[in-house]
Length: 452
Image (cartoon, rainbow, N blue to C red):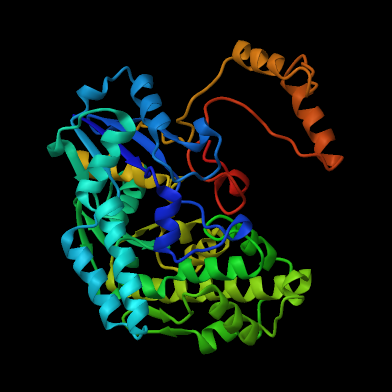
C-alpha cells in the first residue's frame, strides 16, 4: 500500500491568516503551518521533505507541489500508483456546524457576527471543505485524482500518529498541544494497542489556545507570530523566573479536569492594550531589551505552568510509562524538559516532526494504519534531498561573482576553520548529507541535541 501525506494549500498564507485572525504585513504577518509531503510504502516511511527545502520560501504554507514530486521521484513511484492521498485537516460538515454555532453564540456585535459567518463560509467552501481540498489538489498537480483516494485526517490525530510512529508505535499516553486544529487547540489521552482514546473532558477549545496566546505575545514583542516563538523562549533565559505572573493571575484559569481558559482578545489593538496593562508596557518599552526579557519570562512561565497542569491530570488518568508530546508547544524544549524531570513517566518522546511539518507524515501513517517499526529501524530527520560534491561545486561556480570559497584537505581542517569563524562572530552554514525534516532552530533539534 502506497500512501502520500501532504500539508499545504494553494492559498495557505491567506487561510492561516484568517484562521488566526492575523492582519498586517511585514513582521506582523502570520506565517507557518509548514507545507510538506511524506511517502509511506507498506507501513514504512521512505521519503519526507518540506516544501521550503525546495522552494527556499521559509516556513511556506503553500501547496507542496515540489515536495510531492520529490517524494514520488525519490521512491520511483508514479502518482497513479499511490493508493491514498492523506491530508491532515478534516473540516467536516459537523465541524462547520460547530464553527457556525460558536460565532452565533459569541458576544460579538451582530454586524461582526455576519462578517465572521461570511468569512467562515468562504473558508469552508473555497479552502477547507472536502470539495475544496480535492479541487486544490487537482488544480495544483494537474492529476485527475479519484475522489475515493483522498482521505482527510483530523489534525491532532495526524500529530499523534507522527509521534507514535517515530517512537516505535507502542502504547503511550499523549498530549498534543498546538495553535489550533479544526476546533480544538490541545487534546490528551492514551494510545493502547493502536487504539486512540481521547480524554474529552480535558480538551481545550481553540478560543483558549496556549499557542495562539504565546503567538500574540510574540507579536507584541516585535517578532513574527507562529514563527519566532523560539526567540521569546530564548529571551526568557536572560532573566530570573517571575515572582508573580500577571497572565496566570488575570488571563488564565486552570480547571480541575486538566483544561484551561485563556482570555486574550482576538483584535491586535485590543490585546496590545491588555498586555500593556498587564506588563506595564507602552510603545517605547516594547523596544527595550530588559522589558522584552521580563515579558518573555512571564510568557515562558505561563507555558510551563499550563503544561505542568495538563501533565498532572494526564498522569493521574493514565498508568502508561511513556508520554508522547506533539504539536507546536512540544518545541518549547525548556518546558518539555521540565515536564520530563517532574513527571512519573519513565520516558517522553518529542519527535522531530512535532510541529506542522510532521502532520504530513502523521496523516500518511494514519491512513496506512499505525504499525510498530522494526526494532532495528533507524529513525532519522535527514530524509530530504542530498547533493554530491560535483553539484555543490557547480552551484558555487554559478555565484562566482558574488561569493568566495575554499576547499580544505580533510574534516579536521573544516572543523578547525569553522571554529575559527564562529569565534570571530561570523555566521556559518554547515551543509552535509540529506536535508533535515522539521524546524531547525534553538527550540528544537539542531542545538538541543541531534538524534544523529
